[in-house]
Length: 133
Image (cartoon, rainbow, N blue to C red; front, side, top):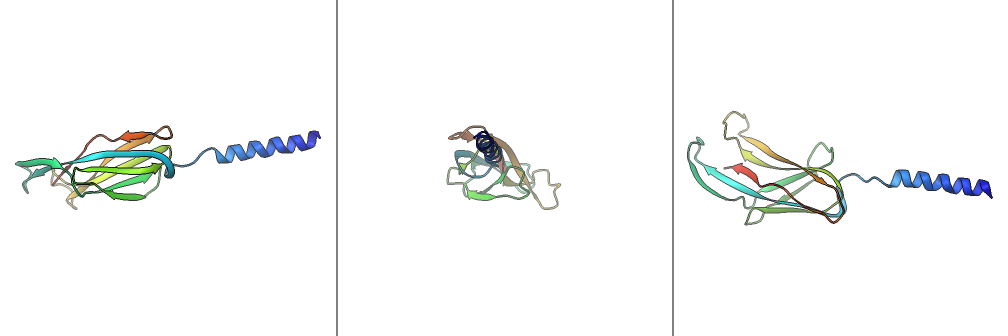
């Protein structure tokens, strides 16, 4: 009887240790959302022509320590985006902006926000992401 109980306890311990931690990503019930704000400048970035919602922008999310983006959504007409069904963990949200310093060879750079979901059923709002156009 003791041997059976011992095997059962070891089995439960091993099962618990390997099934408790899930990595960041799909399959949860939390949400990350935010807004893109566009600062529209002339070509030399010397005159601000307007500030408006970043409509129809590609917004990317990286799950945990992945090396490339895992999901992409587009912002709506108000510049709002949302990533749903996420588990607890660390995420990086980013969008591309024109380079206002005119120093980047590509002419663009990523605007990044680190986000942590700590609980299930959590909605995390990202600070407004400001881009140049």
